[in-house]
Image (cartoon, rainbow, N blue to C red; front, side, top):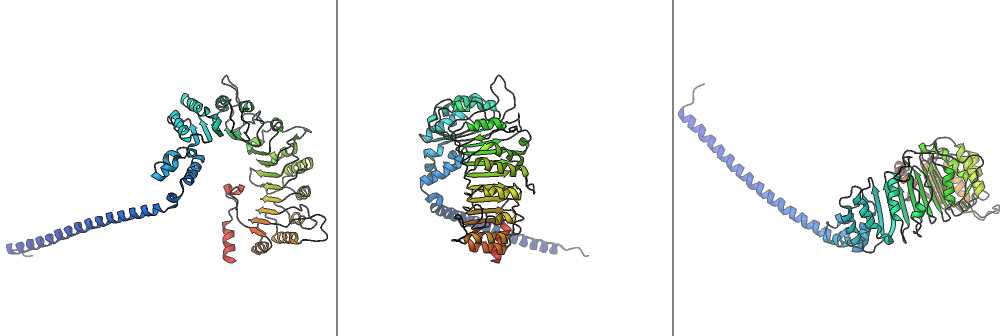
Length: 502
């Protein structure tokens, strides 16, 4: 290759400079275009901001009256969001104005982790004015600041409507409760969570003793929920709605006779819920021999959520005015009849002869003969709920009109009943639709609603036939349904198939 001459080198360098100049011009054009893009983006952001502002001015949150916003904010605080009033007051001027409604500040949450609990309590009390107070106290450790803040709240005891106390140990709860020995004219709801270590020390008793005395000046206290590993030795005489939940590890043998003796001394008791985990059933002290059943003359609702063996306690209760009975297993279904439950339920119904309107068996199965015997004792039954319970077809057919048992039955809720045939259900519902039969010895009601969820032998054609006869549901509808929180009866695939095919 020949060497470039000086003239050729000058020509090449000149061409390079021309291209470099073009590149510089292009870079300048790019920079100018980018500046224009940024300017356009800024203009776009301004327009988007204006759109959001205009949309906000017509949004439900802005158009809602302040008292409605205040009610929403109150629900936020009641759900456990302790600092809700402070946070929402910084969103916008309208929300800030709504946050000044006194009831928004009526839910006071006091915990051992609270920063400046005295100052916070002062603020909440001052802004709540004379609104009813709902007090929640979570005690992990007793300290001076927490106790001083609690004393401030106690100074407003005349405004208390509900009180929830959670403590790691029963002695801590007792220490807080002993400070409550004063008038509570409007207190209606009480919740206590604490656990016994099984030891009594110089610091005080290791159980929730003295509740009756502490709240003797609370004439409206009607609802109490206690979560502990012991049954309380006494309770205020005014309680009408009671929930006793055993939890954590047992520190001793919870005594059913002692608990029932305590319940028998509550003259106003109308609703009772007992929650007994599986590991407590093994250590429970049951009544021995031919123990006399405890009379609860005013009880109308009984809920037992426990292992099937715990249903034995039914036969030691006499409840002549019971209207609603819910038996729910805390274990997985046994997939076989549970003889203890069937026998206890039979004896319970024979002793009490209650005017039962609702019977629920959730994940509890009993024998065919127990079904037939128990249903024959329930002439006023209006609703029957069965979940994971293998009720035979002939038991359903025993309900047929006009001569069937349970003539007042109006609603039937069946879930995961694997042996029940759809045709038997259709025949049963159709038999109740026939009125004026001369063979009817007693008046009987038609089936107003039937719910069928995940019953293997109930075909789609059966659902359609049931829907032609009465209201037929394949969904969980009530917000208070026991299965909603468990997620066991969503039935989404089955509902989708029905929608697509019919």
